[in-house]
Length: 223
Image (tube, rainbow, N blue to C red; front, side):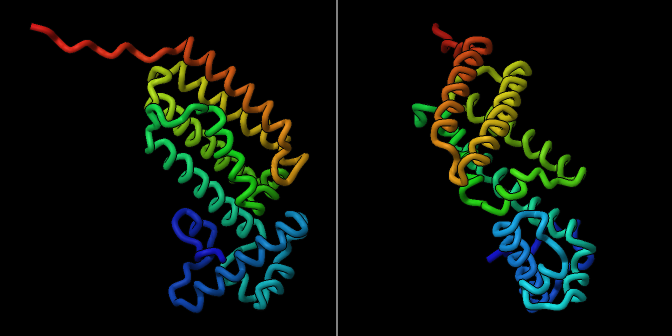
Protein backbone atom coordinates (compact mmCIF):
# COMPACT_ATOMS: atom_id res chain seq x y z
CA UNK A 1 0.00 0.00 0.00
CA UNK A 2 1.12 3.54 -0.70
CA UNK A 3 2.19 5.75 2.13
CA UNK A 4 0.43 9.11 2.35
CA UNK A 5 1.51 11.73 -0.14
CA UNK A 6 4.39 13.76 1.23
CA UNK A 7 7.16 16.08 0.09
CA UNK A 8 6.75 17.55 -3.38
CA UNK A 9 3.65 15.39 -3.87
CA UNK A 10 1.84 17.73 -1.50
CA UNK A 11 1.93 20.38 -4.24
CA UNK A 12 -0.80 18.41 -6.04
CA UNK A 13 -3.10 18.30 -3.00
CA UNK A 14 -5.95 20.67 -2.26
CA UNK A 15 -5.44 20.04 1.44
CA UNK A 16 -2.80 18.29 3.52
CA UNK A 17 -4.25 15.48 5.68
CA UNK A 18 -3.51 15.96 9.35
CA UNK A 19 -5.28 13.06 11.07
CA UNK A 20 -4.40 9.39 10.69
CA UNK A 21 -7.86 8.62 9.31
CA UNK A 22 -7.51 11.29 6.61
CA UNK A 23 -4.03 10.06 5.68
CA UNK A 24 -5.35 6.52 5.39
CA UNK A 25 -8.19 7.67 3.12
CA UNK A 26 -5.73 9.51 0.92
CA UNK A 27 -3.54 6.39 0.68
CA UNK A 28 -6.63 4.34 -0.29
CA UNK A 29 -7.39 6.79 -3.10
CA UNK A 30 -3.84 6.54 -4.39
CA UNK A 31 -3.90 2.75 -4.20
CA UNK A 32 -7.22 2.63 -6.06
CA UNK A 33 -5.87 4.92 -8.77
CA UNK A 34 -2.80 2.75 -9.23
CA UNK A 35 -4.84 -0.47 -9.42
CA UNK A 36 -7.04 1.05 -12.10
CA UNK A 37 -4.03 2.45 -13.93
CA UNK A 38 -2.30 -0.95 -14.00
CA UNK A 39 -5.37 -2.96 -14.96
CA UNK A 40 -6.94 -0.66 -17.56
CA UNK A 41 -4.50 2.14 -18.37
CA UNK A 42 -4.50 5.88 -17.84
CA UNK A 43 -7.55 6.38 -20.05
CA UNK A 44 -9.68 4.50 -17.50
CA UNK A 45 -8.84 6.89 -14.69
CA UNK A 46 -11.87 8.93 -13.73
CA UNK A 47 -12.65 10.51 -10.39
CA UNK A 48 -15.82 8.41 -10.15
CA UNK A 49 -14.03 5.10 -10.68
CA UNK A 50 -11.13 6.01 -8.43
CA UNK A 51 -13.50 6.97 -5.62
CA UNK A 52 -15.50 3.77 -6.09
CA UNK A 53 -12.32 1.68 -6.04
CA UNK A 54 -11.32 3.30 -2.75
CA UNK A 55 -14.80 2.86 -1.27
CA UNK A 56 -15.32 6.59 -0.71
CA UNK A 57 -17.56 9.24 -2.22
CA UNK A 58 -16.45 11.46 -5.08
CA UNK A 59 -16.85 14.36 -2.69
CA UNK A 60 -14.22 12.82 -0.43
CA UNK A 61 -11.84 12.55 -3.38
CA UNK A 62 -12.33 16.22 -4.21
CA UNK A 63 -11.37 17.15 -0.67
CA UNK A 64 -7.81 16.17 -1.60
CA UNK A 65 -7.52 16.41 -5.38
CA UNK A 66 -8.74 19.00 -7.85
CA UNK A 67 -9.19 16.42 -10.61
CA UNK A 68 -7.83 13.11 -11.91
CA UNK A 69 -4.83 14.94 -13.35
CA UNK A 70 -3.74 15.85 -9.84
CA UNK A 71 -3.88 12.17 -8.87
CA UNK A 72 -1.81 11.18 -11.90
CA UNK A 73 0.65 13.93 -11.00
CA UNK A 74 0.98 12.63 -7.44
CA UNK A 75 1.51 9.04 -8.58
CA UNK A 76 4.09 10.01 -11.18
CA UNK A 77 6.05 12.22 -8.83
CA UNK A 78 6.37 9.35 -6.38
CA UNK A 79 7.58 6.95 -9.09
CA UNK A 80 10.14 9.47 -10.32
CA UNK A 81 11.42 10.25 -6.83
CA UNK A 82 11.74 6.57 -5.92
CA UNK A 83 13.86 5.86 -8.98
CA UNK A 84 16.00 8.92 -8.37
CA UNK A 85 16.64 7.56 -4.87
CA UNK A 86 17.72 4.22 -6.37
CA UNK A 87 20.21 5.88 -8.71
CA UNK A 88 21.53 8.13 -5.96
CA UNK A 89 22.06 5.09 -3.73
CA UNK A 90 24.05 3.42 -6.52
CA UNK A 91 26.08 6.58 -7.03
CA UNK A 92 26.86 6.80 -3.32
CA UNK A 93 28.40 3.32 -3.43
CA UNK A 94 31.22 4.63 -5.67
CA UNK A 95 32.03 1.20 -7.12
CA UNK A 96 35.79 1.37 -7.58
CA UNK A 97 36.28 -2.22 -8.68
CA UNK A 98 32.98 -3.80 -7.66
CA UNK A 99 31.26 -3.70 -11.06
CA UNK A 100 32.67 -5.75 -13.90
CA UNK A 101 29.93 -4.44 -16.20
CA UNK A 102 28.92 -0.85 -15.32
CA UNK A 103 26.76 -0.45 -18.44
CA UNK A 104 24.86 -3.67 -17.72
CA UNK A 105 24.44 -2.81 -14.05
CA UNK A 106 23.06 0.63 -14.85
CA UNK A 107 20.67 -0.69 -17.50
CA UNK A 108 19.43 -3.36 -15.08
CA UNK A 109 18.72 -0.58 -12.58
CA UNK A 110 16.75 1.26 -15.26
CA UNK A 111 14.85 -1.92 -16.11
CA UNK A 112 14.01 -2.61 -12.47
CA UNK A 113 11.90 0.54 -12.50
CA UNK A 114 9.61 -0.94 -15.14
CA UNK A 115 9.37 -4.31 -13.42
CA UNK A 116 8.85 -3.08 -9.86
CA UNK A 117 6.53 -0.18 -10.66
CA UNK A 118 3.79 -1.37 -13.05
CA UNK A 119 1.86 1.84 -12.43
CA UNK A 120 4.79 3.95 -13.58
CA UNK A 121 5.25 1.64 -16.57
CA UNK A 122 1.63 2.24 -17.58
CA UNK A 123 2.18 6.00 -17.49
CA UNK A 124 5.63 5.81 -19.07
CA UNK A 125 4.51 3.64 -21.99
CA UNK A 126 1.40 5.72 -22.49
CA UNK A 127 3.31 8.99 -22.24
CA UNK A 128 0.26 10.25 -20.32
CA UNK A 129 2.18 13.26 -19.01
CA UNK A 130 0.93 16.78 -18.57
CA UNK A 131 3.36 19.56 -19.51
CA UNK A 132 4.20 19.85 -15.81
CA UNK A 133 5.03 16.16 -15.63
CA UNK A 134 7.02 16.28 -18.85
CA UNK A 135 9.13 18.93 -17.13
CA UNK A 136 9.41 16.66 -14.07
CA UNK A 137 10.44 13.78 -16.35
CA UNK A 138 13.16 15.94 -17.91
CA UNK A 139 14.37 16.91 -14.46
CA UNK A 140 14.35 13.24 -13.48
CA UNK A 141 16.57 12.37 -16.45
CA UNK A 142 18.96 15.16 -15.46
CA UNK A 143 19.23 13.65 -11.97
CA UNK A 144 19.83 10.21 -13.50
CA UNK A 145 22.52 11.56 -15.80
CA UNK A 146 24.22 13.18 -12.81
CA UNK A 147 24.03 9.85 -10.96
CA UNK A 148 25.58 7.98 -13.88
CA UNK A 149 28.32 10.61 -14.05
CA UNK A 150 29.05 10.25 -10.33
CA UNK A 151 29.18 6.47 -10.65
CA UNK A 152 31.61 6.47 -13.56
CA UNK A 153 33.81 9.20 -12.10
CA UNK A 154 33.83 7.42 -8.74
CA UNK A 155 34.83 4.20 -10.48
CA UNK A 156 37.78 5.98 -12.04
CA UNK A 157 36.50 5.34 -15.56
CA UNK A 158 36.00 8.89 -16.87
CA UNK A 159 37.06 12.44 -16.16
CA UNK A 160 34.86 14.89 -14.28
CA UNK A 161 34.31 17.30 -17.17
CA UNK A 162 31.54 18.89 -19.22
CA UNK A 163 32.07 16.62 -22.21
CA UNK A 164 31.73 13.49 -20.11
CA UNK A 165 28.60 14.91 -18.47
CA UNK A 166 27.02 15.44 -21.89
CA UNK A 167 27.94 11.88 -22.88
CA UNK A 168 26.29 10.56 -19.70
CA UNK A 169 23.15 12.54 -20.46
CA UNK A 170 23.09 11.04 -23.96
CA UNK A 171 23.41 7.56 -22.44
CA UNK A 172 20.42 8.18 -20.15
CA UNK A 173 18.27 9.47 -23.01
CA UNK A 174 19.23 6.51 -25.20
CA UNK A 175 18.58 4.02 -22.40
CA UNK A 176 15.15 5.52 -21.76
CA UNK A 177 14.17 5.16 -25.43
CA UNK A 178 15.50 1.60 -25.66
CA UNK A 179 13.77 0.50 -22.47
CA UNK A 180 10.55 2.11 -23.58
CA UNK A 181 10.52 -0.12 -26.65
CA UNK A 182 11.66 -3.22 -24.70
CA UNK A 183 8.82 -2.86 -22.19
CA UNK A 184 6.31 -2.04 -24.89
CA UNK A 185 7.08 -5.42 -26.44
CA UNK A 186 7.25 -7.40 -23.17
CA UNK A 187 5.95 -6.44 -19.68
CA UNK A 188 9.18 -7.82 -18.23
CA UNK A 189 11.42 -6.17 -20.82
CA UNK A 190 12.08 -7.95 -24.13
CA UNK A 191 15.26 -10.02 -23.43
CA UNK A 192 16.76 -9.71 -26.90
CA UNK A 193 16.23 -5.97 -27.08
CA UNK A 194 17.56 -5.57 -23.53
CA UNK A 195 20.69 -7.49 -24.54
CA UNK A 196 21.16 -5.26 -27.58
CA UNK A 197 20.65 -2.17 -25.42
CA UNK A 198 23.44 -3.33 -23.12
CA UNK A 199 25.76 -3.87 -26.07
CA UNK A 200 25.06 -0.37 -27.34
CA UNK A 201 25.67 1.15 -23.91
CA UNK A 202 28.89 -0.83 -23.45
CA UNK A 203 30.16 0.48 -26.78
CA UNK A 204 29.13 4.00 -25.81
CA UNK A 205 30.85 3.71 -22.43
CA UNK A 206 34.03 2.45 -24.08
CA UNK A 207 33.97 5.47 -26.37
CA UNK A 208 33.41 7.81 -23.43
CA UNK A 209 36.36 6.38 -21.49
CA UNK A 210 38.59 6.91 -24.53
CA UNK A 211 37.38 10.45 -25.24
CA UNK A 212 37.30 11.58 -21.61
CA UNK A 213 39.88 9.52 -19.68
CA UNK A 214 40.31 10.23 -15.98
CA UNK A 215 43.12 12.53 -14.98
CA UNK A 216 46.32 10.69 -13.95
CA UNK A 217 46.73 10.18 -10.23
CA UNK A 218 49.48 12.54 -9.01
CA UNK A 219 52.59 10.75 -7.88
CA UNK A 220 53.59 11.33 -4.29
CA UNK A 221 56.46 13.77 -3.85
CA UNK A 222 59.84 12.24 -3.18
CA UNK A 223 62.74 13.68 -1.24
